[in-house]
Length: 222
Image 1 (cartoon, helix red, strand yellow):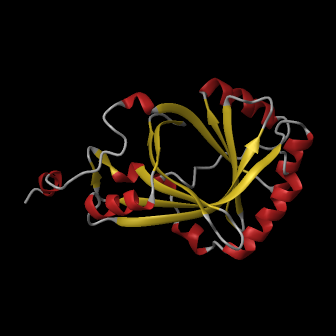
Image 2 (cartoon, helix red, strand yellow):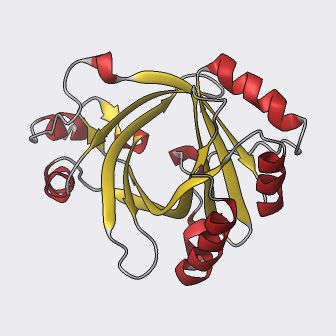
Image 3 (cartoon, one colour):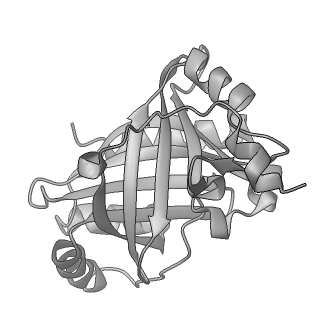
């Protein structure tokens, strides 16, 4: 039996639509960073501070198909408040495909729990799920409006600084950062090729939530 042909007969969700106009390309660079590095970037006015903090859950699905795309290029990201209530902020279905060494084609759509359940029930078969949790801070910068930047905490030993945007803007910003801290470029832990199950095993919600809330209070730039 041809497994691919069998799968094509299964109802599929078309969450992104048939038009590619909502897709975009961006360069993404991820740096290993410390709390002291963040302080140096702020004191040097490279960034203004941290804008907010949330708990982020990333789910990856392998060995199945979603229309014409291998689903390992798809992930479900759920963001929630941290602390006592852990209230859900939003869920996204994200398609992220590497098209060069550090540039991606990306689509993103807000989805609700019913759509997630429908997706998993009707569109994914025989899948293996991987999971990466993280605490995420949006970085504020008054002079780099073309960039989207985040600080993320994956484990007691891993904090990262993600810089995303147009290639020329990212490259220019990296030169500014290079003058203040050492550039320690690392593979993006939230891209499927780099998913490391050990990160979730080392993830201590209560400990890291406490540390990241303190970091946020110290460097809040709003």
